[in-house]
Image (cartoon, rainbow over all chains, first blue to last red; front, side, top):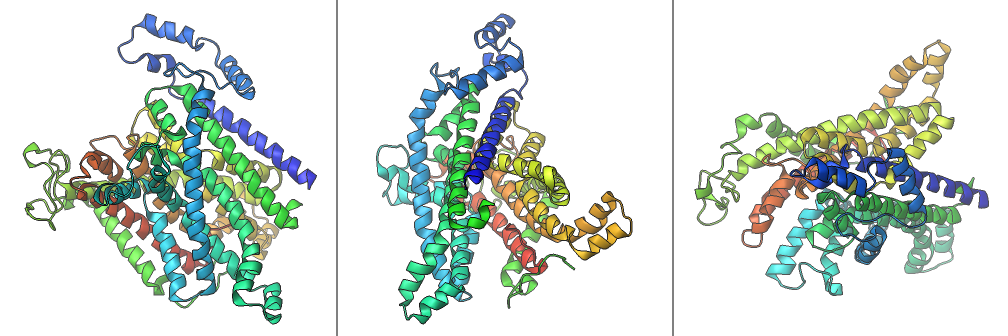
Length: 304
Length: 288
């Protein structure tokens, strides 16, 4: 178990290091950053001044190692636009993104698990096919469009929910539902497949033979075994959702990390952009590690 | 023909299933729209007419029979823009998938075929790729380098190869140990010949299924990026861009975002339905 953990941790660190390099390269793709920061009307002297001020006149490798060295101590540099530390900016915006991501995940789980169980119990019936159809529809739904439709319906026409802002829990209902839509198809399919497999196994036959009630067999025996891979994938999905929340934050004007990244891209504020890419990737790597650990605890064969 | 374990075909699978046919009809119609768009559009999709702004579509009162789906905020014919947008969606979907397919299949086949250190490297590349937030990185690249179709296709292609790699790798691993591959080795075939003549044709059906699903994903992502203003450059009518441009008017005339959204949703659904049908037909597995 310990060697599995160590190996998994080394891979995670290597991935983080690679993403760090990629994030750095990404922001240097445009060629001369000083020119793009200065804007179209800048004089040559302005560009030189900016180059000096931001340390862009130093060799690229020196800039890279400087950035990596500081990032390891938690210092992600300073924002060009906001004139504050990037780590402070991200820390300020993170609660909104996390609230959104967790709301979305909870909504997704509370829809997919019951749907998956019911579809598995009635495998092959019209209901099962209906659930699979719903999963397909969810997959095809453009999230930004669904967000706008919900805004028109529940925000404007019915007036039930606020259409933007982060003031109260009500602000997170619509964005959470939209975000949940992206995870529901995968989670429903997995729950259904896990339940079908569990229901066909020997211990369920034993439980039936003992004369246990149907509800007890389903919820106490089958679901427990089907749930752990679902929870593990849910952790991975949360990582995807945090990365994908940029679109939903934009639609609902939620000032989270995604919104920050979108603003910073528009303003050529590249220290913020590379930091957000790095932070989201590290969160994803950490969540996949959690998922792997859960699977390993459940299934000893994976630890080899 | 498929060498990989066949999934037990149910009663209504493949071409016997209605949903596969619905998917095929939607994709067929979209392909016709995409290829013949210049002949099909009733008006010039770029021609503005400010006197005829936001004309309502045919199912509402006071509609103009010259504009079946109405006009947008600049008086451009909505139906023409919708058809032209289909051309752009399909073009991007297919080209992105070609780029990502070339990358993903090469990486995946190499890893699955050679195993060992090469496979470790391939797995590492896949893990790293999955940890990168796609929308954010695509936005950053386009934001820093400027909007253009070529850049958009290359960026998405470089980001979306993961599923190709995963499926190519796992199916190659299964095929590599089968008897006919061993026979080819014994007959003295070169590595390249075994790969191109024995392995690739036998994993092709799985890759076709992945390709359909990837086209759908690329179309959705293109629309998302265009919606955020960093995808297809205006005045090109991408469906995502149409929704973004119409957003300011949606509270008074919801149809301006409903029409392109329904088109996008239908096309993606159609491609996915066709992909699922093909998967059942080939007995292919795209999960790993």
